[in-house]
Image (cartoon, rainbow, N blue to C red):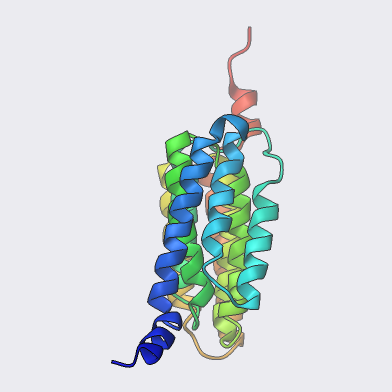
Length: 232
């Protein structure tokens, strides 16, 4: 076998670079977990998510790294979700987007980074607030980069990003998780794969509005919880 031909094939192999990216994510996660005493816990998962995005070397991929890195380090607001609910909604959102965009180059990278980030967040029992906002930003960017060749995918991706941004803010319970994840999958497969523009636009806007309303009704905001808490 010609070693030069083998080397060229190896260097251009997506599987090789994907494996290297996964190893980099694992290494970054180990380092960050080891340094958790020096970092706020809610900042660590977002850094791991950004490290996972390094697996994409296109211009859109580097923009994804920058967006995730910046957004994930923004301050955590009071009442950040600390349960498993918010990471589950994030996984559902990224999966739904992956299932409807015609190109999956950047979506696949976010999937890998998100899995690592969820594992680190659970290990540290870290609030998901900043990382969740980074996932929302990733959804918007991936929708634009991977869904630009099909208008319905852009519409579905925008709806998925909106639902993902709203759902964790109401401190979701089981019913909210089911509504959010199932609704995003319906947007993905029911709207994101359609041809044309008018019908997907009407269905996407109305479906997203109904989902947001259902989520707000099914959940309770932090302000509502505080007002209903016993005093004295």
